[in-house]
Amino acid sequence: MKADLVAKMWGIFEETGIFLALCRHGFVLVVADMIKSGELAQYGLAVTAHLLKVLGGKLGCGYDIGCQFGTTVKKSPL
Image (cartoon, rainbow, N blue to C red; front, side, top):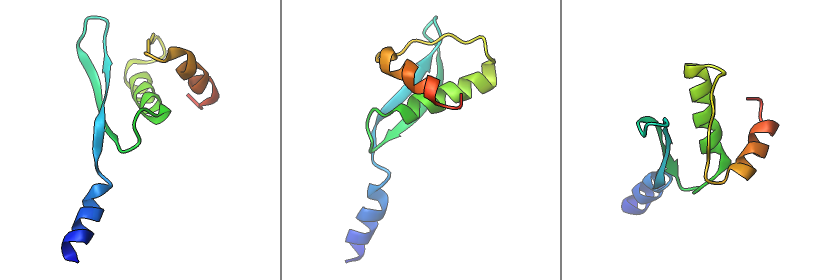
């Protein structure tokens, strides 16, 4: 019984991948663990918010599903 509880408790932290932000030179700027939910907009928004906070408003970005992400950013408070 205890093993089941421990497995269930730690199961919520299952990593499914990583979300990276790179500069145009290929240097890693931000790394975020993707946990259980796969490729959702929350990772892109969190990384974008962090980069805007650190680097300021003169920020350009590209994303592999940019057409959908652009709409998501426009709807967000960023």
